[in-house]
Length: 398
Image (tube, rainbow, N blue to C red; front, top):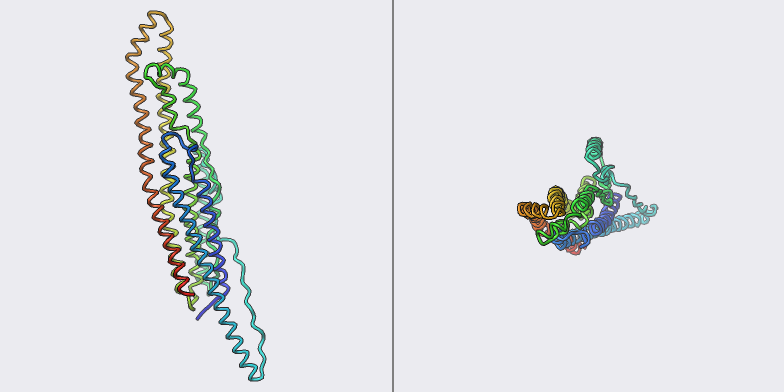
């Protein structure tokens, strides 16, 4: 039976730290991934209940993650105490024998518990930077790739060195909190689109309203009254959450090499539980990327539609401005304006219908996100089952 009490103490600290990290994941997701009615426009209101449901499911996943790690930390601490008590009892028994033989033995040397150091890895240095323009993004993407390659090489060398060592010390592999920065989603292009549309079309929209019976500017911009930057931030929050959950899984798996030499009571149960926790966290991180991508796609589609609207509004402005000028000339101008209006109104209505066709695609995209809710709910059940299994297993082995 091989027992390294210092590693057991460090393992308990790793598990406790992951429980804290899981709480940070829950707080991050709840703070930055929730979208209020004020963050969404008219059409995107369909997203609000779906987003609320998927965030709630994600928060539940993080909550049960923290509970699972807390149980692991508590059980590891209890196990270490059991081994310590057995060691004290054996030392006392040996001392009693020594005394009966006229010898003396020193008091039991209580082992000191080492303190867990910082994690071995962190998020890339540019992880929390905003996208910026394409040139800035390309430069820092290249820098991050070089940083990743260098870091990967160092980790590989360390892994080989650790693998050849006679013994391993438990440590935390990934700094999970480094993957939970405040999302930065600068996007001045969106506000620029809105501003241009209002300036170009606002002065002649009244004429369209006289011809078609409604204000195209009002109807076309309603869906985009929400805060697209907030939607992008929510997208980044889901990316951060997925990376953090994977980090939790890596930290659980990272304890296995150092703890593999433990062959005493409870060792197999611990190794199996740590491996299971790691795999479950890796699995539940999967849908977070899909949700993040869907939100980014929603913003991109909204921007494309806004660009199309701007293009149509420019064309409508020219027609309406010309009609307004013709109508200002008595008799002849009125006749010309009436003739042009007869030809133009058909194009105007078609342009408006084109805009609505593209807006309907937003509805389709948002409706398709319902599957993401089901995936996250399934993951919340999976994490709840993991927690219950660990809790029942710990109770049965006390």
